[in-house]
Image (cartoon, each protein chain N blue to C red):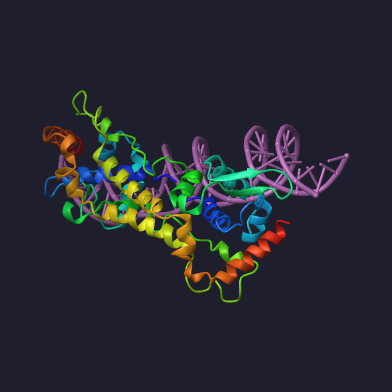
Length: 162
Length: 162
DNA sequence: TCATTTGAGGATATATTATATCCTTAATGA
DNA sequence: TCATTAAGGATATAATATATCCTCAAATGA
């Protein structure tokens, strides 16, 4: 069970967008070149993020993506679920219902105890992701990314954006 | 990102084995019929559990599987990792290293902040699974499974086992 | 007006993984 | 001896992830 690489791409792209100057957009092309990713396929990830209303888009030259909300109001979970979907990572096929000696009505009401534990773990995973905002990435967690590097990166990426 | 159905199968099979009378074994055949699962494929899941040393096996008639440790010493995580492996659910491909304006040495030491958050969530997931023992499944969580059903189930499955 | 750039999304191709079955082998017990 | 078992290799099929190409309509700037 491995997350799609598109999750990683979407997270890094949103991190870049989080520092974008007001009123600017970044195109798929610029984001793809900046991260060394295949443009066409990255586009699919950005479309997912767009469908989740985490970013706004505009067309034409100087068009592209920008965050739809402040980075403090976008969590990791928002982005992960935009790409991976909201479905739980464990699906209960209710195989205990195949128990040949179960009485009538058994398994019709409560979900399986196994499934409940697995879903609880799934929730713990989501809760962690829900607790980290895009703004934390730079503020709390970004200490290994010197500000001047970010500055240079933006200059580069904005230059590519025209 | 969905867990393999083999995880579900392994968990349910271990739950059955947890109540097995001392000295008995249950075969793949009995466990497959009891759960209505394909015998050959379930065998692969049980092999994974066996390789993780969670169960002991013996050959021949009346052979099969039994737990290698008391149910209180086997966690959900043990079983999940036996089938899914211990690899983290998020892999960092270090795409920030493709940043064309990064200085030399950047990205060579610390892991990416994005990856650290994703790994933290992964740990939260594993910690939950680590906190639930096989014995909890019957004791704490098994309230929706009346003991007489379990009793009947074992009679049935043991009868099939010969 | 018109050429260019953009995101959205459909169609398709390939690679990887999950699911499933079949077979052989060696060990076990009746 | 003989049936039964787990282990594991080989193989086949289905589902999914990865990747590319194409068209379309909207936006931009000359």
